[in-house]
Amino acid sequence: GEDVEQSLFLSVREGDSSVINCTYTDSSSTYLYWYKQEPGAGLQLLTYIFSNMDMKQDQRLTVLLNKKDKHLSLRIADTQTGDSAIYFCAERATSGTYKYIFGTGTRLKVLA
Amino acid sequence: DAGVIQSPRHEVTEMGQEVTLRCKPISGHNSLFWYRQTMMRGLELLIYFNNNVPIDDSGMPEDRFSAKMPNASFSTLKIQPSEPRDSAVYFCASSLGGGMNTEAFFGQGTRLTVV
Image 1 (cartoon, helix red, strand yellow):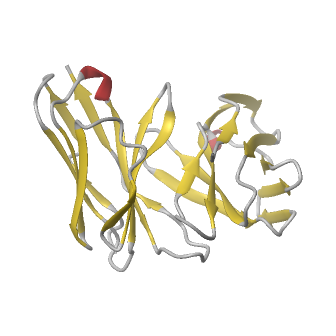
Image 2 (cartoon, one colour):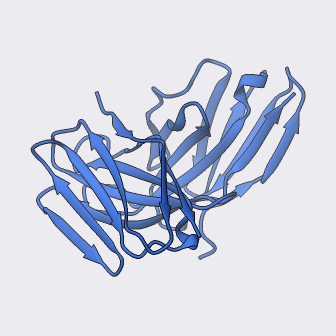
């Protein structure tokens, strides 16, 4: 079945890079997303990648995809205190039910 | 568009009472999702509608939970009777359906506390 796994916590110092990891199980063509949730708010899309891509860069964000290992990572360069939040990885098939399956979320804490 | 609108933002109720959560998706979106977020289980998909029809309700915990989507602009999630273990934040999300890359837009959530 579908399953998306993430580590629960990550702590980094301001100015360092953060790397948040995710593994997924669906081997069919899929879109993979990174969402950010700030305290008391809903989830907001940060970036996405299609499964035929290896990398995507968007300003401070770099997404790396290892399709063979079904491993996705999100790198945040020059991490700021405002980046403290919960980060969710999600996958969505391009056929079938099209539902979004989310990981448990990684709580990122940025230390000043 | 104002985005996905959920109401109420907060709900406190006593065990055994009926609770109804409401969602208005983004106009033009034809897929709607109800999620439940807890510290222990993370973000769980409860049910998913496409064109107002329930497609996958395998995540609905038990018969106490029911969801409806009478039209394209409104959905409800009902818990009857409610129990303390139902306490969580419930999110509604909507998106354009189909196989294209589409973002799921989330509402602000309803924080439910059952005492």
